[in-house]
Image (cartoon, rainbow, N blue to C red; front, side):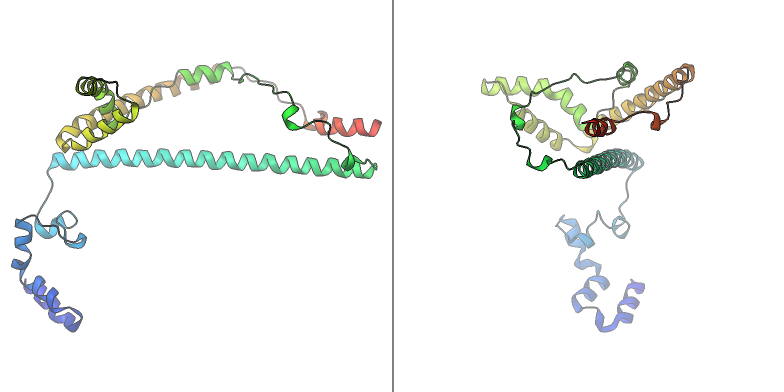
Length: 259
């Protein structure tokens, strides 16, 4: 308290009288802590544990550490998804620029030959074009690799929902006599999850940690199998030079010149 008093004296008039009384006389805010009154954020017990002499046990520290690791892995996964989207957008923009460049080149060649393509009437609309649906093409190797991937670990909340879903459906049907909708089940499960204590939630966080260890082990095993398969795959011959292949644009230009 002497250090606090010296600090207040050193600050002089910059410290308000009310703040001086609170800093020098701790009895002014001790009753607030005894009655669990709401304090400002800057003076709360949770935000300043060392000031009020509170500390967490080793089990609580481990629990919060696991929760921090879970949130960190979630943020890393979101960051990877964002990077994939950015890369996809860049590829689309690149393909669009290339298409516009080829279109300008083809129009210049048509203008050079005096083709009046601007005034050619359109005899059909886009709606009249036949819709062709092609099945998605997937390589056997890619399909096999995707099917061999291990199942991702479910977060604690999803594990709780999977465990309590049937129980909530039966309870809702017994009380109201009708089948619950998906929105009702989701709302009830969220309410039950929020009502759980930290000790009850620890069980699902522990299950998540065990499931994550299982996922990492299986993922590493699949990666080793893929590396072994790649080493055993024979090398393909190098592709031919691009100048020796005619693109669709070259064929179209050649047909125009021949006409």
